[in-house]
Image 1 (cartoon, one colour):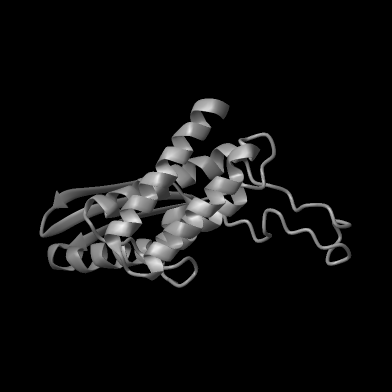
Image 2 (tube, helix red, strand yellow):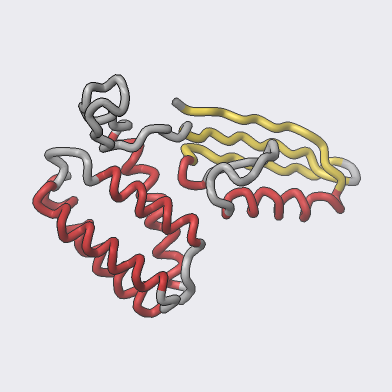
Length: 186
């Protein structure tokens, strides 16, 4: 279920950089670690609109953020007797929403690789968690899931080794697998 936040305020010119830094820090922070009105989880973004108009000695600021609420239950948790599902898989979120979020995360990973840097750990963690959720969907490329999981593990290993070049190569491998799967199943 989407959550929408709207902020409209006037801000003095000298306070604008600090506000934008807090917003950027919120986007880079792991989910749930920022407790301000500017708390935004980049992995859950559906829409982000920021408007600034000069107004006297400051700016008129309008911020509109729409983000998906996190699913509190793992997508494929199956434990008989652990809850009231009777051992059935927990419900999956809409596939299209998951894929849209993954597309955004993947684009950010590609951007980091092009800069020859490693991405923020929270970005990679979110992408890998979403990748695991994606593998729970039947009929969406099951035959490719094993290769995809291995490519994700290799990507994580390159990140943990703090090797931007190897990370970029592993990301290219993952991109090729993604393209092959999308060509066949999309």
